Image (tube, rainbow over all chains, first blue to last red; front, side, top):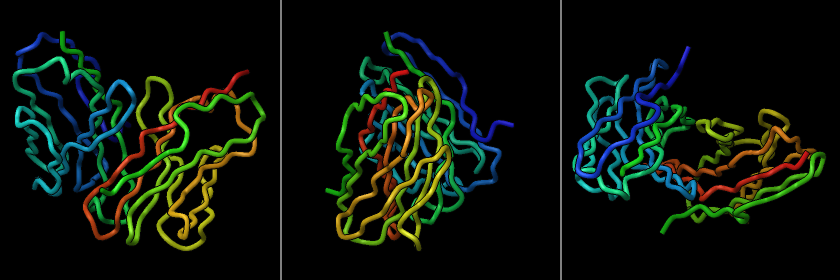
Length: 115
Length: 113
């Protein structure tokens, strides 16, 4: 059974479009995250939600909007896509807040390519 | 600014060679430490973690890491690497009373058969 799943796995789109990436975890965790991994493999946290509440919001353009309908889902919506948004986006989850003694479990990633 | 650094960008070894990947962090408080591995085309998987206790931590696949508090380091080691260890390795630090979970820039390991 997949613990943290993301859809789609690949997303190719034109500049200016709006797109969403979905994430679901079946681990019963109450904290979920979105990370961006650039072409140099550098991982940067974007958002963190705990029990559907935003607790970490790094310096991310407001074109990116996370939505958490329940604690098992954290979707990422991106408006007006730009070339620089091309990256692999990873969803993750953990039991407890980021500051707790808990490892993060990662999804398979979504490779976004903006043309 | 708080940060995590990894000494090597790309390490190339032959099979059976010993491995040590460096990781240093700049947090002053209590931290949790992790090493994650990302095999080509795959997601990140946890290799090992340190929360407290014995500073020498053993993980999966023969990996271990040693936490040296005085050096702010958490180096990853393996006595004999295999071709299947070819991957990207990420050190990560989580400040216990903070909110951030910060990854290092990663070290690419290439093991030649």
